[in-house]
Image (cartoon, rainbow, N blue to C red; front, side, top):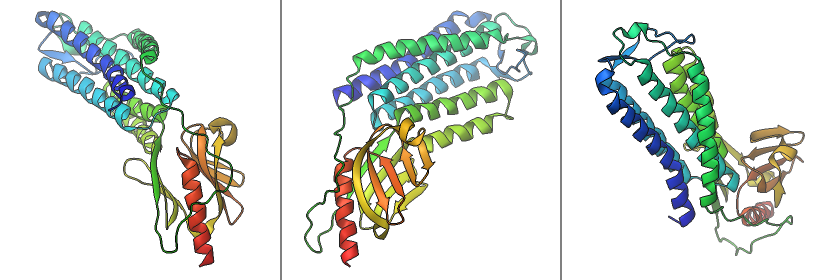
Length: 321
């Protein structure tokens, strides 16, 4: 693990540890004044909907939540390719989420203080606004701490030509690289955790919708890009599905080009524009393939010049027959 990744992992996991320690401290401090059964589920008006948990279950759930989400954030920090913007997004998102969850769970403890009937406990709606404010303040702290994380090395710009790689007759070659967006990954993780929060506060009615959005963000947050005898293949997400393939006989030329996600494609993810499509996870260098039908397909990935050169070579070999 290089120094940048180690510092990023430390900064990423820190807020969840801090929130967990604060929550445990408050729980132990208030222990004698907390009822055996805690109100843990409230409707949008702030009234308890009669759902309750034992003190042990509430504490265990809080520990599992902070530990689980913290592990997800560390895995994202260690395993995904990140730009400088992605580092800021992942760090700010982790700190903001830990602040939001930490305040909400701790406020729930104070709401249950000295309660004799869990159904009578209230958590006023304004508490949610305070939780959001705490989350935003914590996200600001996370952004400040990214100054201690070395920026990822900038990727080479590549070239706009249609280079080739010398291959002997019958020689096989392949290229592959994983690409991703730290911002989309953080957004997906935040949305999944928010789904749990929605289920706790508002019930299962709205939770599945939030979970679906979170899963879609995670699917489109990373991709494995490869060039081989089959052509250019883009496999999305951890499960490598869905898949996009441009076969060799459909390749006219391939080049490396810098693109701007917003200016060129109007945003991030799988994008469709007039006579061109793209899988765009960030601004920067990309493989751009001009297909034999005149349309273009682009995918943002590092070392795109090598991939484009190999794709041109393999396409030429296929044409020769």
